[in-house]
Picture 1 (tube, rainbow over the protein chains, first blue to last red):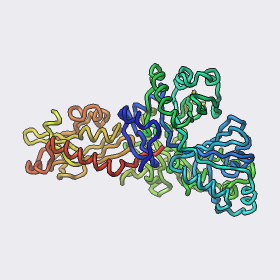
Picture 2: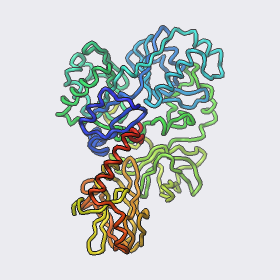
Picture 3: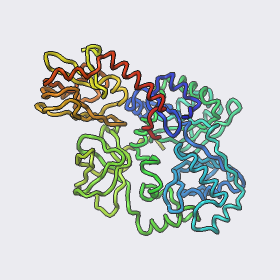
Picture 4: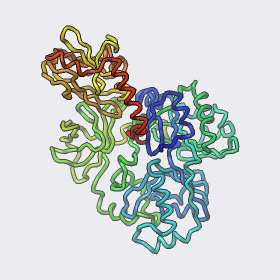
Length: 385
Length: 141
């Protein structure tokens, strides 16, 4: 039985094409992926991302405990700051990529992928009970003594993303954000503010998954439909419209943001997928640290690269990448880039191969199509951060 | 031509027959399902095709589909316009968005195709199947 977000009825009324994703009935498109994509790049779009998972970690040791679970340095975050990170298993392979919101030393919020909400909640619970498979049992025993409580707040939490160059103007003109109008103008990238609206706590962060100026709003589920309608109404003058999961994917692809299940999974290390910047080996012990340190010393065996397909066709996930006819890796994501008007792909390929001097092809349904290595990201907005 | 005058396949191609030649395209249902089309590959003029052979590829942003030939015969014309501007198919699937013309070998083959009304009925059955299965899982985000 698929779940509906609190905004679901509005998507149906608006004519959104609905698909099941991660157990939720979600809109995949409204006016068409390309039109929605361009709207976000040039104006602004609203995304219902209430399917995303939110896990709250509270207690005296909430911050220190989170640092044992994730690879980035949560201890160094200030209150009101966010970091992007991965959560690894003991082998240094990725269980999920996520955002960590630090409200205080005693209150942390993990925002996880919808497909992984249960997995990460169970994993964190297993760490607390000492039931997780790690080599360093002594360190785990220490973690178990910590004063920490975890709660899966996903069912009661809705999330709306407002993304695009006009995102700030919409929020500032909305009645909901009136109490924080001035703060919204200056909130820095990867910081958040908290305020109250209709008796509920609302969190607004300068974050997003599109590469544009944007905000993500966390709010109690019962308020979500009203807030969505209000934002759409006051966004009309700014060109706002709802955006589906289809454009969410092409929008994250151009700035080369990883998507779990594509660039990241339990067979991939963050060092391979270009996320070494979120792996802080010096911060102290965390699950996966030893394996990642060893992998870093030996140099990871694969590297995530960008490809521009020279011929016609789209290199989709799972297609083979070859060099002079020999297989060197696999496409993780590929699409036609609506902004750059090119067929592009990301691929995990063997690091031992020289990738500079041509001869790269992708097997597109049995046809060998030439491709050129190009730098990642494919696209970078000037206004995003 | 208008959709009502066409015959249809289960794979959502339409056929319009005039003086033994079949003009072939894909239905508005198909363009809706595919979304924005970005590449189209067509057979060469002169190619001989058999009924329900895969004869072309339609790449959309999210997915890819094959074009099946609704009839057997020889390809006598292809629509170059949709190769350079595939969005024409999304905008106008029954007129400017036609794919190819085939000189038919056997008009009897048309008997297995749907009339417009039968095709609409077929689509109705598909939709209710989809509901039972809860839709498709083809998206990640």
